[in-house]
Amino acid sequence: MIFKKLIFALVFLLLIIQLPNKGNAETEANVLNMEELTIQVMPEYSYHPKDKKKNPPLLVGYHGALKNNAQEAQKGQVVIPLPMEEKNFRIGFVADYSRDLTEMNEIEYELNKESGTISWETSEEIQPQEIYKFVIEYYTDSIKEKEDSKTLAYEFKNFADIGLFNLIFVEPLNSESFKLEPASEQHQKNSYNMNMFLYQSQGMKPGEEKQITLEYKRADDRTTAEIMEDMAGDAKKAGTVKQNEEKMPLWLVITVIGSVTVAAAVLLVFIMRKKKVQPVKSGVSNDFEAKKAKLRGMLVEGSITEAEYNELIKKLGGR
Picture 1 (tube, one colour):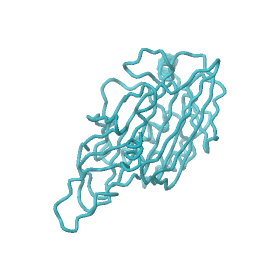
Picture 2: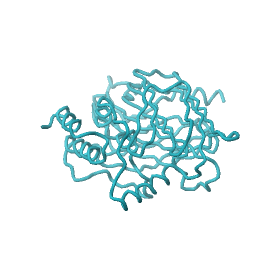
Picture 3: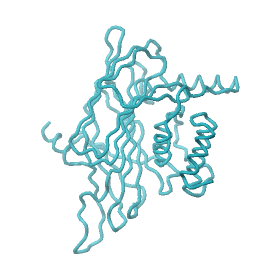
């Protein structure tokens, strides 16, 4: 147990770098900085593909952005601690993004249960000042059922210097009296009328912790993903889509659009992921066009108004 805690404290984003043989080569420590980490906690969102649908599932997603601060391109092994001691912990999905952020690549990984870490080799070299983005999704059976309520004690112990840390709790559809302690700093709804609660920290240091307790009631035995799939089918039949009751503030939309990796995740307008990972490429040829396409999708979907769309296009440098 002591060994595991030491590993957790020291491993913070260990990167085994293939540095050139130079007498004044930079040290391996802090070669990659965690610019941003967004964690989504999604009770009863979906089941792991191998689940038998007995216990209420908890899906947690890590969406990270690392920046190469070295003067040389880097390629190596990323090592990140995960709470493998949680009940029935299992990995659901691990991927990184192509250099132009237009394609998601599912990657091979290794789990070290003794140290409680996941590791993988970067798909491509990370160029100086370039951003490397990854996604990790895992499931646990951490939700406890007591009489007519369900509870969750979530804890995150930071393992790196993080520029911007976002912790998002997504309320499952058809739930009641969803309570978080301490209360969240931001509360928004997406186009499926799902509540999203945001905690945000700037300049988070290794060893800092976030402890959130959750309690809610829910009688529906379907997962949120199953309900959304039904809603999407009904919307297609009716030819309509439910609009937002509340709009995302422009600062959050800009943050999301500026971080292509977590855009769909933070807005949570996706349905169930297909078995094979599909590229998110849509014919765009550059970064501006990719962001413009995402804004156009948000406009059509109703997440932003036409006036907000035009304002955001201007902020991106367009007309």
